[in-house]
Image (cartoon, rainbow, N blue to C red; front, top):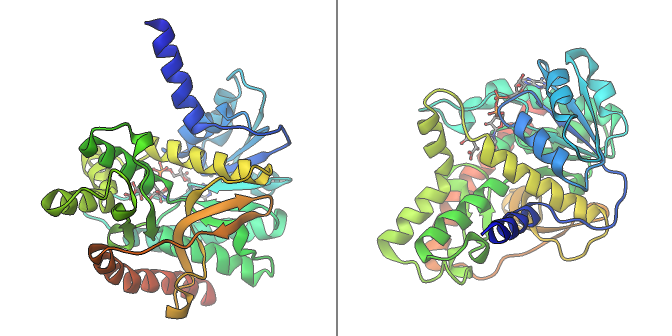
Length: 339
Ligand code: NAD
Ligand code: LMR
């Protein structure tokens, strides 16, 4: 009994953390005191591929760092208070940003723009000065706009490299695997679903037709599943009832993405992970950022995977996605231009 549950827990841990040869990987979390930041910091402390953790927030980061630093893994942990952003970023290779306000019931992610746009812009500006070669992973919403904000801010500073700026869309594929597995009666690991587009409602386009267990799902069950994947975030916002949005599943997803990137940076081949990046896939339609599966390598996002044939239903989903995504991206770029 014990052996079976221990083996199961090892399997689930190895799904989150996979390691290659050890090297120094200093990771910063900006917004480390928040609902996502705290469990994310804990999970990153447990990731053997992270050797140093730099935790920053405008409130509470030194306390989180002191707490997390007692966990018996090898990495060192330092916490930085509000006036220590530059110090927090020194020598950092990967910066994860969950700083900003979350939704309340009735809000869209775009409703967060007015508050979060300037938070993300200012953090990106500091990264551009202190850690211009860092890989920046953006969690703060609205991701469809905050990623263009980070990219445009770094571009303004003359240090933008599209291989190094990613929007974290991993939670969408985590949810899709979980929900699809529930319908198909298989384990989530057996039901990976490719998701393309962006990270909000109609811009989240699940490609169920390309999945062994998704392609057989039809009609009303299909419609409900697509809706649940696109609006899974709303389920959590509603259930939390004014106390914010997904934090724990997001910390899991953020750790999963960070680990995949670090494995690529470590030289591991064949790591495939979804992310919202500067992408050629819809550039001819004026859409400069797009989420799809990518392959991280030693320089960051090295290969952007094209996706295959869409079904008739997916073509319709894509038609709804593209104009909204374009608008969200343009809003982010315009914000930086006018700053
Ligand atoms: P939270 O309010 O619990 O935490 C946010 C933290 O950011 C707070 O500790 C706050 O002090 C800090 N912060 C604010 N301004 C800052 C600044 N200038 N510098 C550093 N830290 C700053 O919110 P949360 O639940 O952790 O959510 C954070 C963000 O992540 C929200 O925008 C939310 O919408 C987004 N989110 C994204 C995904 C995704 O899939 N990408 C999933 C869930 C939540
Ligand atoms: C999510 O998908 O859970 C996040 O983007 C948070 C939200 O606002 O729904």
